[in-house]
Length: 426
Image 1 (spheres, rainbow, N blue to C red):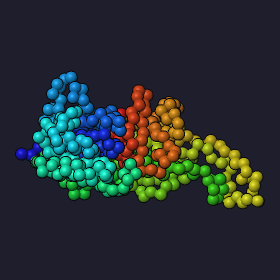
Image 2 (cartoon, rainbow, N blue to C red):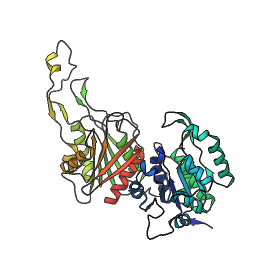
Image 3 (tube, rainbow, N blue to C red):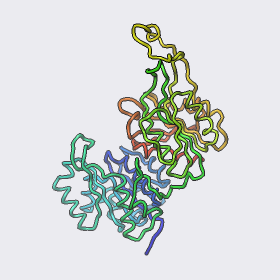
Image 4 (tube, helix red, strand yellow):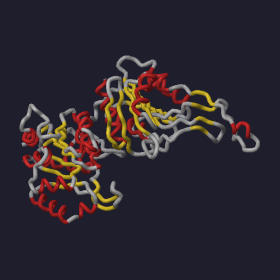
């Protein structure tokens, strides 16, 4: 019997890889799967239930008695799902499932579930290789439990070996395969299982949310600006442009017409995106005026230099000959690209700003929300290996009513979360 619109129950356990469950949810959703989440109390130490509630638009189950309207919560969860995926699955939870121990909502649901059970282990290499763990895996395999094997590499504890959570795209693909085995049909299934991932992240070619930005125009600013001191020197910052490029890439994959205004970066142009390359803050403002006016969504992720040299030299200033000019460089204020354009925001247009802060992140983001005229500020903490130049990021979405904390995740996943938030505002 064929079933459409299947439901996957995702179990999240107390592992540092729990943040990747957010990406698993997004990957399955993009393939047309309804996702619900059940998590252990220890998992909430790594990722809060609010995050999963925002991603799934479903209640998040944690305690046996956390839903007064459903006195037999573990049974209803077990009956509702077509596949129960536990990712990441710790050694402790695996041992409980193997021996029928049901002492919390997740393990009680696992014992009650008749749907296929899929486990994606994640743990220290020595825990993974321990005889007890291997024996538990053997018992579960004999009972028909599917495993998505842990990968090898550098682990969070500093050890190297097998034990890291499998790649998100592999987990999503395997889950979709299990759904297909039991006769469930999901949107984009064929594409997701044969050519699952676009370069740069887990975005399926025929995802369920593929067209949710169709007909929308999106403008994104990205990267740093450079402000010349002379013909060879300049003032700039550490922005890599990765976040802005991820947003542009994700918006294009979801059907939008995207214009990316990019400062100097070492990144390839995203496929299907109109890229306008600029150097200075004034260049960026000039290039962004027309796309901003035409946009439905404008995302200002560029790290624009606040100041510029007042009198840049058209040649290289030389030590000895130009010591006076080099010893004191007069600076003047650059135009504020976000505030200038947001002042002309029209009704129905959504403006997203970014706040890169080293301290008082939320306070500064709230101030920026007001001073810049944005609808929402994506706030993140920078410095000491955070945000600038990295492939992942932790952020807060701040608007006039509330702040939503997002866990550490890949910039591709964060781009999707930002676009999801924007769509709700539109």
